[in-house]
Amino acid sequence: MHSYYSAEKDTARLSGQIAASLLKNYRPSSPVLPRIARYIHKHTSFLLTTHVGADADGIGSEIGLYYLLKSLKKDVIILNNEATPEYLRFMDPTGLVKDVQVEEQNHPDLVKKIQQRFVFILDSSELKRSERVGELFLSAGCSYATIDHHILPAQSNFCVDPSYGATAELVWDLYHHLKIKIKKEAALPLYAGIVADTGNFRYPKTSLRTHIAGGELVSLGIHSDFVYRALYEAQPADRLRFLQRVLKKTHIDKKRGCAIAEVRPRMLRGLEVGDSPNEGIVNILLGVRDIQLSAVITATHGGLKCSLRSKGDLDVAAVAREFGGGGHKNAAGLKVDGSYRLLRRKLVAAIYKACEQARS
Image (tube, rainbow, N blue to C red; front, side, top):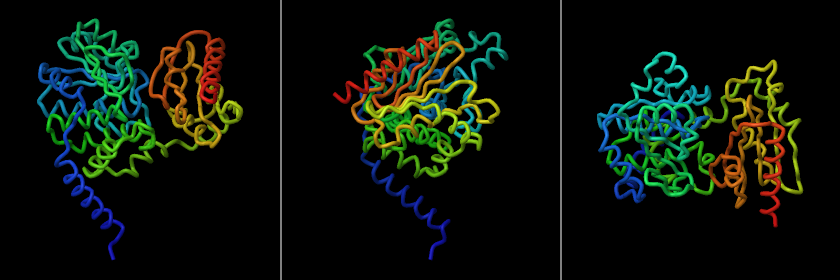
């Protein structure tokens, strides 16, 4: 009888064999891939970044593309608007992703350092969401293009294909388009990005290609259980107390089918919850049978931010766009400055309207 360990080894071996067989005749078909390839072949130095409030897909696609470019002997740096959240640091064990605030302190000539680099913005096609990093590379006169899977108006430097379940899936496909072998260092962040942005392979844009991508990445030695636990089951114990406080203040509207939680600074007092206390709460709220839309509204120093999730045809990306945000139909977010009370009132009204329209 096989031991548990040897069974795992047998499973990994089988995964590798199946992946090799499936991918032998696989041909990437996205029209954006040749455009991205042209940018890559045209330039030698690159700056990679993503949207403010970087998530697993943004970071995963950055690191995945980093290793692809390095395999082509390109000069590459990754610069984000903030430090990688604690719960996502397993994706970047060597610290490839740099924090722009730290870099500006350590390098007063940072603008000069990034001059002559071509910029890829990953998982976002809205320049304003690049915030400080965007200001710097525009000051440096850098040209840029986006690599994204969100639905946006066409623009010549937007390499966008909404058929992908995650930007990390698009980067995985780029490896195959360029016929470059995926290293294990790239496989982990790419897999984590796909898992996170597809809701663990559940969201509507999860396709056969998404599963093939995930399957190949697992076959390269990625432990799916480790990634799931790192993303969803690695919160500190005080997170339960914080969640208790949030749920006490959550408004549940059965008639409209929505649950709206509000997070205020006082809820964090006396708790050690890390730097991403809200992570996953919006999904917990959506996991109730009668809830079709969930929202977690967080008070910030200058306004608010909000995570939105929905089921079926209820489009939360449309709600987010009303406030300058964006995302997918069933998973979106926004961040806006102004009077918290006024913004909250307007946002709740927009949420109610979306729920009522979906039910009519």
